[in-house]
Length: 152
Image 1 (spheres, helix red, strand yellow):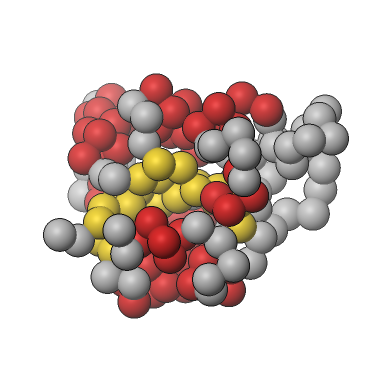
Image 2: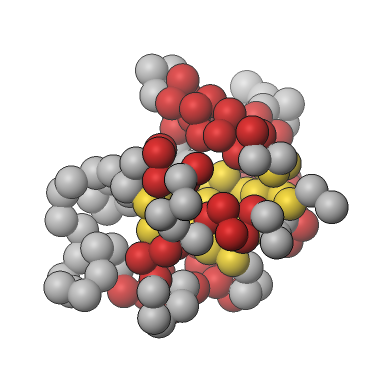
């Protein structure tokens, strides 16, 4: 059965960075993973007038529930608040969590973790680094735990 991945990201807000989003999707598709990308899945809901925001949020929540994992792009200082909320929901739903950050700026008060320590409640205490990526190559290489999960 094909795995389902929720790709939490802020890239849909930027026309320039959106091309990078396609690189992530391409990697996951090559691993035979179905990608739930929230901007693409809800673009039909966004209207110039009317109430659409609540329905969009509810749709994203349902997609998170239906996915096997969340892969969250957590760049920024602080990272995008929508992505952080999606991660909080994923932690509460006990979903498998993978984090991607290629932003070199310090974003934590802890020397142990590169991001807010609460995010790491969703990762294993030991070997959490297997779920934390800093390059696109890390995703499809055997250096991390993603390929193991994808092939389970």
